[in-house]
Image 1 (spheres, rainbow, N blue to C red):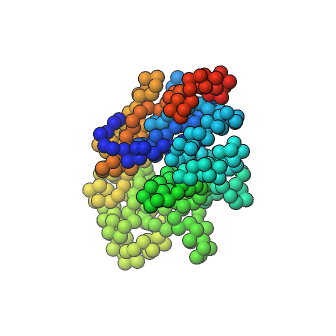
Image 2: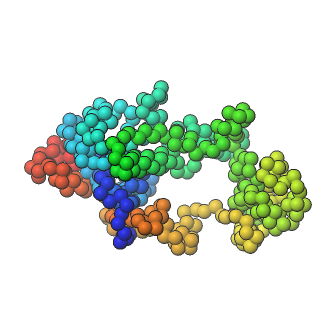
Image 3: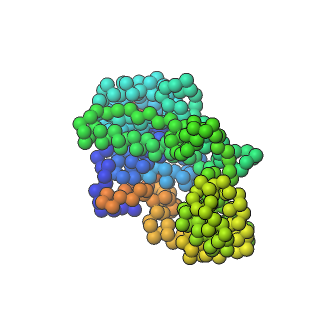
Length: 401
């Protein structure tokens, strides 16, 4: 889990005030590349993610992926004494990350204006459902709602059926990634160009909206409202999921002009491959149903493995639809080091996604496991100047844990 390279964000101190997914995913990304992340959790239960999905001895195994490389302190931000400690930590930090509802930190005296005035070099990442301003700023926002507002939910699924969501919280992680990019840009402006700190405002729906490709331009230019299309990619053909004789599905992306010709030759439909009206995507898109039917007629005669082998031989991009088991056993995942094993505090060994992206000179690393609740409270606060007696008093009052 270690490497011998200098971590590219070593020396960058991050104070994480968020919980669940979006803010913590941003800080996890920074921590993977060397940032020192101090995660503030509420005394008692801590971050609710500790109890999300499947638990082992009371703690989510998801926690081992999301909170690696972080330190945990327990601090009650709802009381003045806790707010004063958080403010002290923020004044020593390079970055503060939060994903509370807008206005929450302001009520606690920890808002952007207060912290920036005291620490002009501070960078603050704020992730919320709808952003820090606008008519919906005060509404609670979750990933599913942001995905729907961004237009993603409407186009996902099959025509005439209930719109479906992806099986993960895309809105949160996408917002977290946008936030991490914003932090890196702000660090560059501050440190390489002599600038000051700044506030980064990321809304869940805007992060997803940024990924919707031609959705809005097509409506703006033509009044076209994209509809759900199942496994197909509307306007780009052929690109779909096709059923094989064993009931499994193969994904085929034959939408490149030369790839399309090779695919049609493979399936015995050179008539479609040589048709001049189908030489380019705009022509194929108009006859996508016909082309898909021809491909389906071929895949229906062969098992999934046979189909994939034939497509590989013809140099046509294709693949099976992976389950978690497929991922864990795949030799390419293993060869690339995309899966790493961490050992939780209770000794459980868990496979987690490795460091992404890969840097040739300063690759990231999983330096240490996810923390137990409040594991680093004493060491962090002592380094911030609190005495053992002060810490003991605050713990007795329930402000620390």
